[in-house]
Image (cartoon, rainbow, N blue to C red; front, top):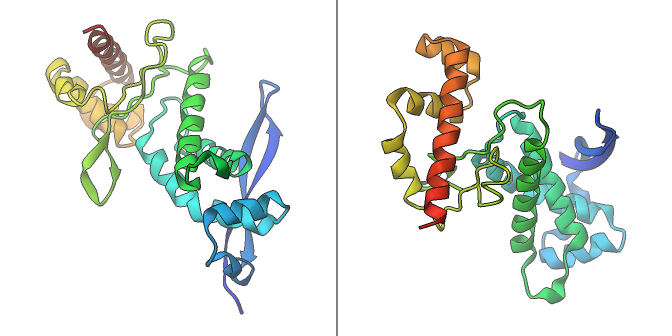
Length: 239
C-alpha cells in the first residue's frame, strides 16, 4: 500500500477581532499522487497548480514546509505561540504559489523565501498594534538559523519604524553585524541571562524559577533589554 505524507490546506476562520485569519489543517494523500512531480521544475509545478491541479499545490507546500519551519526558528515573536509564526510562514508560501510570475526572472524558491519572510514580518507588525499583548517586540539574537551552520545567526529584524513604532525592533543582519557583540557590553549579566533563556523558549515563570527571581523581575529585565536594543539600533542608524 502506498505511503502517505502530509498535505496542508489553508482554511479561513474568523478570529475574535472579526477579521479573517488563516489556519493550517493537515490531511493525508497517497504518495503516488505526487510522484509525477518529481521530474518537473518548481516553476512548471506552479503553473500546473494555477491550472487547477490541487495536487501540484499540495506538492509545493509539502516540499517547502520544512523551509518555513526553519525560518520560524530564527524569528521570535514575543506574545505569540511559535506555531503561529509557522502558520504565518505557510500563508506566505501559499501566496508565493498564487502570485509567482515566471517572467520576472526569479526562481520560485527565491520568491517563496521572500514571501515567507515578508508574511512573518507583517505578522510581527500587526501584533505590535494589539495593545493586549505585553512586551511586543521581535528579537532574534544569538539564534542559529541552521543547525549545521554554527556561524550563521539571525540578528535580523529590520528597520521598520523604530521611532514611530517603538514596540517593534527590527535589525538587519547585513547592516548591523556588530550589534550582537555590543549587546554583551550594554546588557547586565542578569539581563543577558534572562534574554538567553527567553530566546531558548523558556516562559517567564520558568525563567523566574531557574534564576530564583520573581516573574515581575523577569518582565522588567526584558523591558530593559528591549529599550537598550532600541537605543542601540537607533544610534547605529544615525551614525
